[in-house]
Image 1: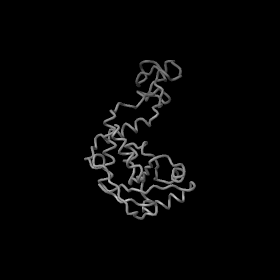
Image 2: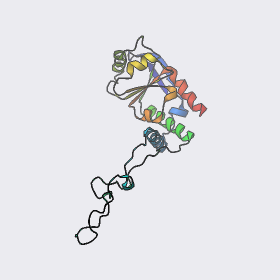
Image 3: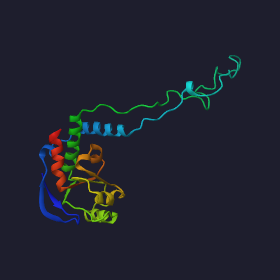
Image 4: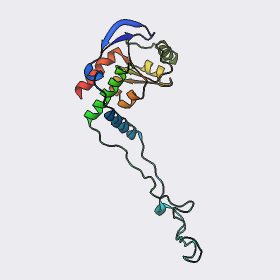
Length: 210
């Protein structure tokens, strides 16, 4: 698959980049994408939720009323879940939501996410660029030139670029990461991938190692 290279002014540079069919040309596997996204979101959860059950409530254990003759149900403690302020039945407890996912499954999920974006025409290749100083206005100008100001964008850089990152970090719907930080969730959570020309080889190299 060949794509044209654009500059940050939204104009074609005349150069072409060939994307590997082994990554961008495969048939996307929706199930492994779902598994990897689920795994990513599960790891974002703190799992520190806690509700007190009746054994942990500090209330009087005095018998509330006599056992029989009231016309109502028996009641032996104000800790019971049926009373206001009582313990909760089967309340949440601290837990770890992580689960095992094989490396090859995660790798296939990322490949599938890349392939899905490529085959739906949602990848743009940008010529290598930088900003002289961190200015949000510069990043917004780039998005406007590419007609992507109202889209969720994921910019993939070949390596860290402080000025570019600081320029775009406060832009709504924009995310900036390096090729080594890409995950399936970020790929699927964007409307458009903006891949800097130098990052293409690093993306392909990351799959050859896995």
